[in-house]
Amino acid sequence: MTAVDHTQVEVLTVEEAAVVLRIGRNAAYAAARLWRASGGREGLPCIEIGRTLRVPRAALRQLFEEAPTHPDGGRRSAA
Image (cartoon, rainbow, N blue to C red; front, side, top):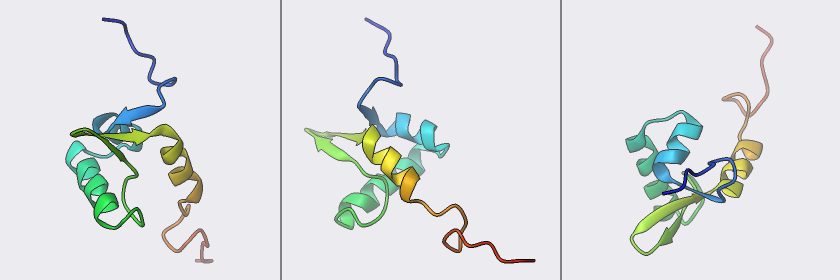
């Protein structure tokens, strides 16, 4: 079997996406279920191929780009 360079793969397993996001496996699967149940409005973007779920790397990039940098939407209050 050939070693896979994960930086070149276009789709990740949910477990691999969890590592990238630094969240647990169960949290990643819960987020993927939420994405599917909400029609893609929230959660971890994924596609279903047969009985497996895959997370497109491009969807992860977009998730990072659209995510607020601070819980209040990116606006930091003067404390």
